[in-house]
Length: 120
Image 1 (tube, rainbow, N blue to C red):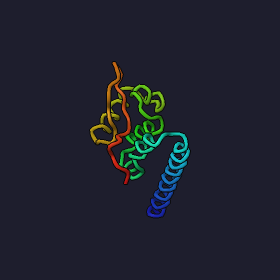
Image 2: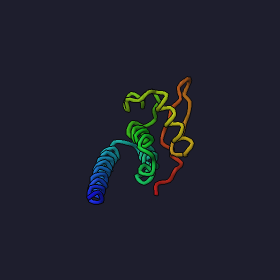
Image 3: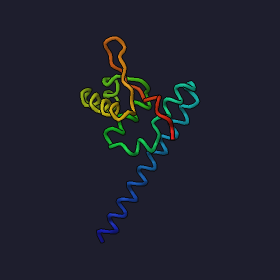
């Protein structure tokens, strides 16, 4: 009895993941029409396999950064409804993992998807 319930839960989770990936693909296809070639290459650098390999909290942060482009931890925290310090920590983890680049403009620190990564 427990095995069948566990299998049903796994199938349900896989369907949810598939649905979210489908939504991401549609968003990327829609954005491809609106952004320049350079921005498109940068956005594609964080591919689906990489996103799936990240823990949920980092995936949320990376996906938000992917959707809005270069941003500060404060801007991302307003979208994810997490504290700025939490998002800053997550973004710095992504920097250490070489998925995100960090740069300063004046007093603000910005993060962007690492364009030196190559899409697989």
